[in-house]
Image (cartoon, rainbow, N blue to C red; front, side):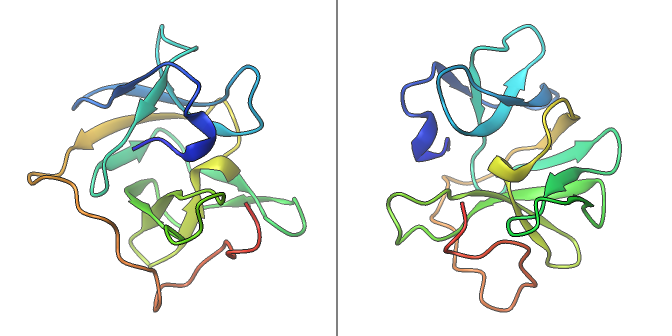
Length: 139
């Protein structure tokens, strides 16, 4: 899936072994993933897709804008706040339950798609018990 804010950007679905880079998209106010050699194309991840970052992922804190480190290099893509049509939905969930919006990732970070979900994507369930770094009011 690609966030609502990328609906006017060229896109394609992710494939296993894709090399992704976090990027800002031209003429948008959001960040997402592009593939090597396809910087103008958003790479859309399905809920359940697992990715591994080359280094500890860095993201911008939603309130303080301080640069923070995510708790691990491997994350599973999910969507949050889906009941809010004009909020960012694309997020990464880490092993400890931490959730970071893709739109908060610092640009220029490389990751690899490890695996895609085996079944048809389902809507992600709300993250109720997970420790979240994002709030529904920020995004």
